Image 1 (cartoon, one colour):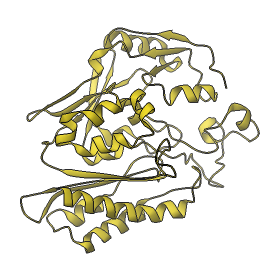
Image 2 (spheres, one colour; image 1 turned 135 degrees about the vertical axis):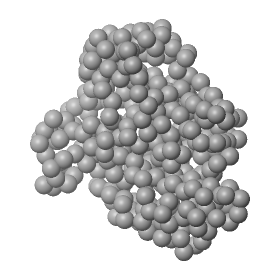
Image 3 (cartoon, one colour; image 1 turned 30 degrees about the horizontal axis):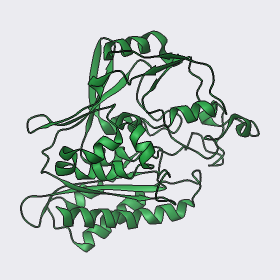
Amino acid sequence: MGLPKFEHLQPESLDEALGVLSEHGEQAKIIAGGTELLVSMKQGLLTPNYLVNLKAIPELSFIAYDEERGLRIGALTKLTTLTSSQVIQDGFSILAQTANLVAAPPLQNMGTLGGNLCLNTRCFYYNQSQFWRQARPRCYKTGGDLCHVVKGGNRCFATYQGDMAPALIALEATVKIAKRGGERVIPLADLYTGKGKRPLALKANEMLVEVQVPMSASAWSGEYQKLRYRGAMDFPLAGVAAVVGRDGSETCSKAGVVLTAVGTGPILVEEASVLLEGQGVTDERVAQVASAAHEVARPVDNIGSDPSYRRKMVRVLTKRALVNAWERE
């Protein structure tokens, strides 16, 4: 379980970091907090020749807000910073609440927003030591041609278990992705391919550098509900982010519900906006949205919890998240 050999590179600017990625491609991996990367390297899941450390690039760690541009957060911003930021607490409290539920405080002190958004998918048969994995045929995620979880499955069903993505997708966030000589801005939802084997739509020479939430700070209120065995450390077994907005009355002006840990990527519950926008948030409509969330959840038995239980809990978590968000609004 020791780390493989690698060369440690520490660029001092974003341009320099992008140049390193352009030069070394798949042989280079970005390290910020390292809370996922180093574990994966010890398990032999990743063996990069170069680690590109971003800690010496202060321009990637910031939180800024104004009415014209909305909220902007640098990818290197620590999760702890999100929980303590007055800007986040006052206008985007769901992000502070969600960051506070990621793992435990020591990992929040190390982990970054960009790192959490770029988490790899997970599976009981994948996230093991190399010695353990050698006892079984190679699965799709390790370059084989079978799935140990879904018998006869023709693809990888590894589960996406990030916490920050559902809250930000519900807030209609976009992300800025940079490479040497250019950049692009895409909806955060489009960052996720929905494929267990390769979950991120990032090329080897690209880096997520900024998260943008374009809406007014007073537009929405939200809640994130997370199911896990322990109150700290654990990845979610299921998670639901819900955001709602009022138009000054008892009518819902905007609504978004996004699930995590019940599929190969974050799942937008499209029925939420259809059922709630322009309507009152009644118990009946909340129950209908919860049923819609239950229907689109697709958990499988690969993260140490019964998938039928996790799917049932999606209904419960959706109700809690919507009611709490609406009452807070």
